[in-house]
Image: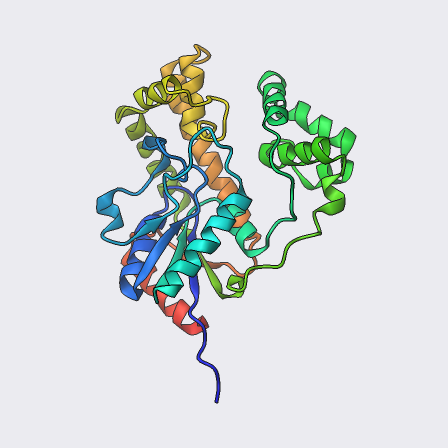
Length: 313
């Protein structure tokens, strides 16, 4: 007698502003699911306006997890998220529900499916020193540092891949080991990794860019500057991960007198458009990605996902 096939885990991604939440909620309502966030900024508490955290109305009664639960002064990592996501997946499935992962941080999802090697706990003093160097001298200087201590790792990264360059430098200075020599020592994938079905939204580029520009302007009109002022006054580090994303970074520059308000808005639009391009590029490298043409709010996109999921399950 053959075994009953195990339930799939649905992962929905795509460029920012493409309607991932709408699609995830649609899938969850049709199949009896709960949503797990994998956006690296939405995990932080108090960071709201420019993160596109779903509203109560957008959640539409569907339980959502791993949103707004991390202190904004914590430099939360992909490995931290993968640990928490694994726990949530097991809890959801224990309730007989479908786990629906949704977000735009591809590195988070990849870390869940292909765990990183075991790395030491973050040395906060070292991280602050490296961030100070970055603030004063930029991406290129950090990249040159990495080339000196681990040329093999540097060959794998672009100079503007700040997160991974920082991680490689931190690993070297904390352990004396080159990350290029140990990164193959990965942990075993979780038992559910093979059941993850990745769907990626692929909307019309010009339409997406128009949505990005309008949404960015709406964030500023909705009180983004006041939100950042409140966060800074409450002690949130303006150079930390939580305020390092797109519009938040540009608002901090505006508040420091480094750019005008108009410049902050226009630069934020450009940042988010460039981020969307990088997201497209990232997911093009995921060989098992199933691409869905259109926005997540399009009914035909939901129908296509459900049809293709049924074929593969």
